[in-house]
Image 1 (spheres, rainbow, N blue to C red):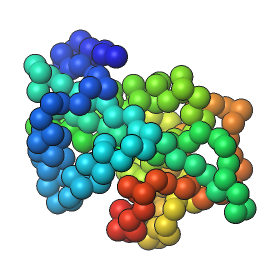
Image 2 (spheres, rainbow, N blue to C red; image 1 turned 90 degrees about the horizontal axis):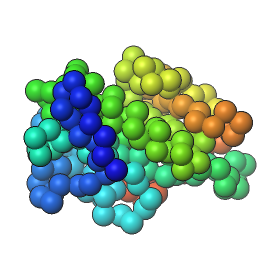
Image 3 (cartoon, helix red, strand yellow; image 1 turned 90 degrees about the vertical axis):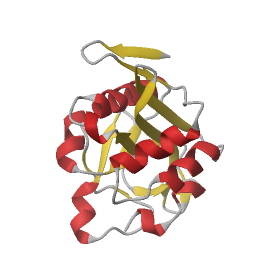
Length: 183
């Protein structure tokens, strides 16, 4: 599936570049002070259900977003409600603030809604993610305790209005089960 963002000639697709080095370089460029490459490689190779979207310009990778299917534990039981975790999202530093990341997120949310996912969670900048309807979430806890200053960064967006879980803990696949990703 491809869409074009006409104003910037960006194509959004679920096709990964043939050269995995492109993904690695993208994340190194977008996050020079953070090493997200190991997480991204694990997510893409894990076999877990992930939605991986790329943004290309002139055939070159300029953006990437991952949505991982997760679960919710409610009072020591698993919920069968479909939920997802957004992240990471990366855009080449030179092309940031041009709507590429937003287009990746919006397309991902549309695809998840169509597939029946009820809610999406993110640990990220509230000022940025609120643009897409994310709000601080105090009902579903992240899989690991967050530092107090990060608490407002734990957010969610309901995709199916009639399917919001009351409370619980997000359960994540092995790729996300590293406490350092949450602290």
